[in-house]
Image (tube, rainbow, N blue to C red; front, side, top):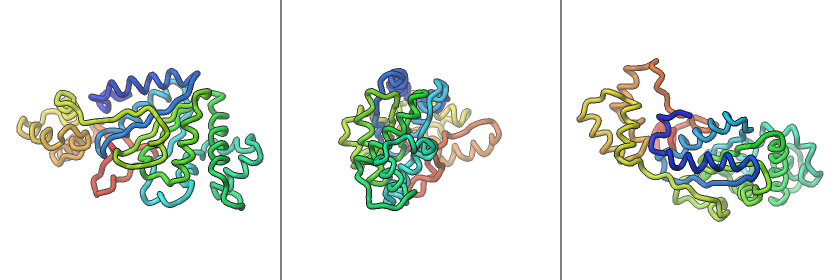
Length: 262
């Protein structure tokens, strides 16, 4: 776990780490919300690293606005690494899932059967070791995938599966009505914001340092995308300063910012 990447997020991480510990025997789900640029992806990445250190399986999907109209496109991304076990599903579930993913021809499947197939397929993987499901930028997931994840999220208690969903605030989706434990990620306090900036670009002049903090107003993205910070980062290229990668992709946020912390 990168301490710099989690400056000011120790409380949120502790809650999710406890969820990892519990998921070995009792699964669960969390909804991580907040505005763009606030650090939701950084938090998810830190939990993913912790899960890997504990020997968890990992399945991840990142919503893309350009794919939001493709039914089950997100589910296709999520299940790629476990599809080898599809033959272990009951025939109706197998047929529904394969049809939903465009791997066989048939009438449009019932979402219930697709959800049940998804849950059982992931649970099969979790029988060997606990499994972490990560769904980042869930506001851009297609409707059927969101419906399936909602179905799965409400049926994890008897599994060894932990589902973490990252979603921008003020976006509606079926996952918001699933009753998931919500963690809202807000702006960093002044001390944490200063610590994060110092770790990204040490030795900034006091005027530049103060100006960046004022403009960022506690948003981590405001630190990493600052013009002054980018110039300083270029000057110290090769010194190991890296921004955390987005789950499953590294594309800019909508709106033209080269954001990786959503």
